[in-house]
Figure 1 (cartoon, one colour):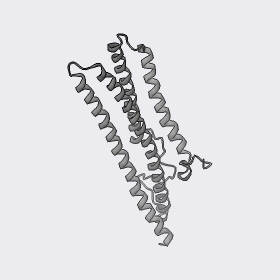
Figure 2: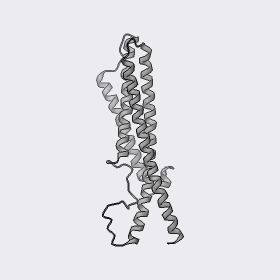
Figure 3: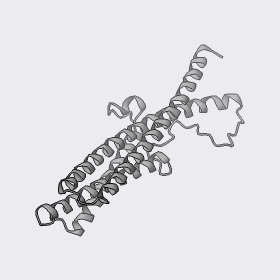
Figure 4: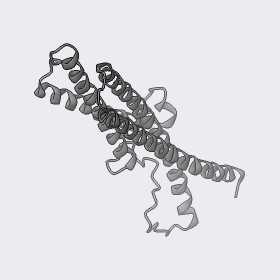
Length: 209
């Protein structure tokens, strides 16, 4: 084996570990996000079960859920970026595997179906747990915004003796609009990055493919 092949093999090993590293980071952040959303919801229920809650507490809850939604958006942005890192490294691993397998045996059939294409995995893979988890984060972000609006509406009805003007139809439209915007963001971002090389993806220059 030549020095170049030794270096390629070493690079393959390092990238394989890096791929698992990015996948581990994704899992850790998703677990944190779900725990974070659950903790806020649990604290809210515990507070609402108390008697003699001051009106200001509802305003505080409304603001809290706004902050939760903002943090959720930041988490979603991080997961999108991490998905791209993972996919690019996985593609390199597949490319090196595809280079070596035919050299081992031209008749090697790869019956297990291990990927060898440098174009896979796709950034936006419908069956990917990464993508599915990002959709869930988008849903919880939307639920946080919806909770903020509803709590503020209740706060306004207690404080100003008049409900915050937002009828049910407009509320549903707003919630669906926010969720749709996030889903479109996920899809367009990943599709755009899918058409770039790893070198150009972070600088916004297309590679011509």
